[in-house]
Image (cartoon, rainbow, N blue to C red; front, top):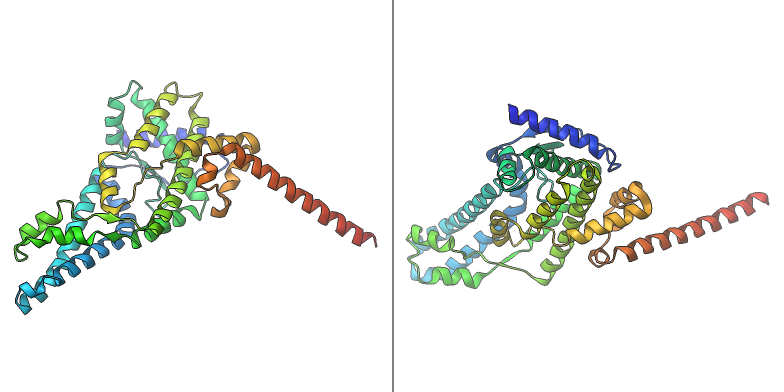
Length: 356
């Protein structure tokens, strides 16, 4: 109960601070303190959407691998084994994914840590146990750490709530990426080659020993770059907004920002495990560049100009523009000036027609 009150108070303060740092209003959703198990339960439907296509690919590859060795076994046994391997392959992969997500639940601080919308309902949440472990290794008081993370959670919730296309766009990109994943067939065949296929325990050990290796096609690499760019833009916007909200309020704000930046850049063990299994790294590689771009846009066009970039995915900067925020801002100004000239010319023509 005391942790729930602390979380509610921290999110409440965060919302007040954010009102001056962004034009997106509060998300208006529920506020909760979560355990790791509750986090898994709440976010599990989103994980299912992301990993189900990979699980299906794993099951299909295992079936193909077994089919190549059917001549070693009696007909009825081969058919039964093929069905068993398809089921078992999916189950083994699901177990590995479950372990990775369970471990991830001990590393995250809230519902929005990884930059993806993991719930459909509007809500903000913090995980007190994870925050306590994180704060234990820092010089900052735990109250400041909680407030800082509450501002990050509330800022990201505002973004996903009011930029309606962003959540479906990100999850759709993840699903599209996962759907095109290819499994290393030769590696699985090698793992199964010298096994007694009737020994389920031996097969299980082989498949949990890293046999599921993701191969990226050129199309997958391009899709991954687009996804990483969007994740970086989300993280960069959150960093810029949080900096504006807490810079003069939390003495430890700069140090905490750097700690979060390093944490996001390196990723934790669970995040790396998930990346190995699905081939998808959840950390934004270019968040620092994205934060610099958002600051440049805010300085040039104000908060309204910064938030206006979220109006449509086609308006967002691409990966090349992330590296050159000044040129991006200059290009926006030139396009705005050109649009103004066109509008003025049209208005002049209309005035001439009216005078006739």
